[in-house]
Image 1 (tube, one colour):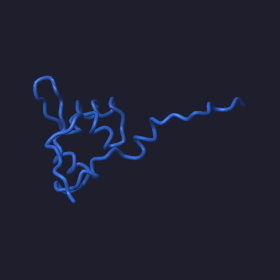
Image 2 (spheres, rainbow, N blue to C red):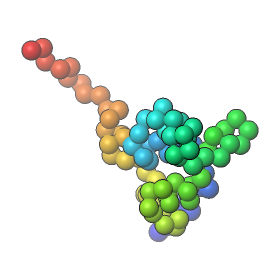
Image 3 (cartoon, rainbow, N blue to C red):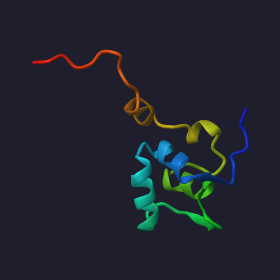
Image 4 (cartoon, rainbow, N blue to C red):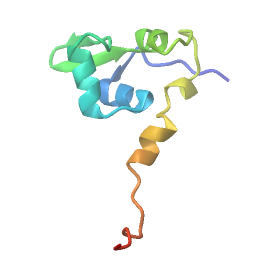
Length: 85
């Protein structure tokens, strides 16, 4: 079942989808590489334009906008510290 995607997402959410850092996403937005809309103080990414950037059709299910595995695993911590060499 396909669910309706929100018309916009935050820059932080777009960063997670793209598998990049928050800082890189804001830099890409400032450089015009990531499409954004400014509403008051909020900077938002239009979902259809993000999907187009990813080469996906506008009617993609929500799974298309889930964070990339690389983005989520990058922030995981291990319980064992690295061994001294």
